[in-house]
Amino acid sequence: MGERPSIICESVGRSRVWLRKWIGRYANSDKNSKKEWFRDKSRAPKNVHRKTDPEMEQLVVNARKSLMAGETEDTKYRCIGAVEVQLHVHELGHSEDEMPSLSTIKRIIKRNGLVVQKKKRYIKRKSKKRYTLLSPTKANEVHQMDFVGPRHIKGYGRILSLNLIDVVSSKAHIQQYAGQTMDNVLEFLLGYWTKNAIPNYLQMDNGAAFIGDLMHSKHFSRVVRLCLHLGVEPVFIAPSKPWMNGTIEDFNGSSERSYGNKNNGQIWNTFGERRKRS
Image (cartoon, rainbow, N blue to C red; front, side, top):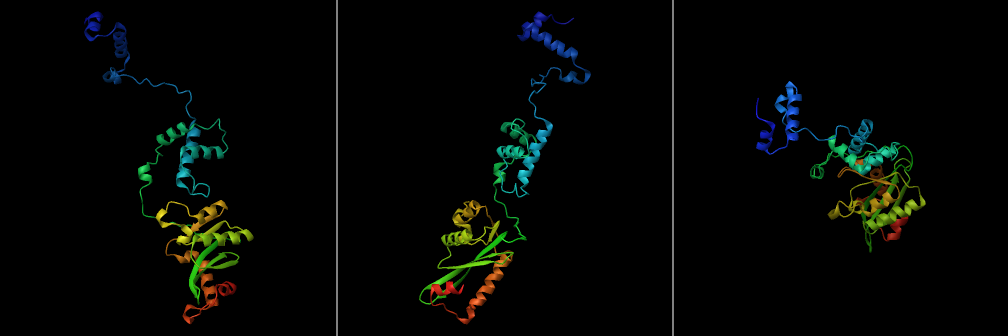
């Protein structure tokens, strides 16, 4: 017969309700779960009333992957967080009422294994040397810029030439300066772009006058900020690869030959004479 219920309850310090629950659990368990009948069952809700629609979840996943890949003009410079994912979904034509909340987006990202660990994300890695190669077909799509020199003026000192050329139309602009400074570059660009068309891209080498202070490499230089302010995308060529700036390099060579080769010992008498010649 077994022990009476009152004795069992008294021995384990439980109520009759508790005893009936576990007797019923054992009696109702099937053969496959007889060994697990005594384990607590999950108390999670069986029906989630605000469960995210599977199509919307897949849309969030696709948006996150697209932002992480950054393979298009629209995504290559964008952030990849939940706010940016939400904005990306909105840009695809979905209303604010349809979009999941930021906390839901974060859960979807985590559930689908798309979390980027900060420690891994910011580890310094060797560059894969991937650089943009532009192939313009219209005037004012790409301007290339470079410093040339120095040359020397008798009684004045050394000067440098800052050259800019349109890759397609070959329209050029030249100005001489006493130094290779960022202030001179800004004056040069503002002076030229105020009177002429502004390009889509400005391509340069990695000179300090263009990229800024090497001690603060994570900061945008004033040249970069000017370009972005005017809607120009700055493009820097690979180090020690002048052929990537081929149009301006060819122009530099031909313009220097027209002024006189270094080997012939040419000397300019005044700064104004050099500017006039250019």
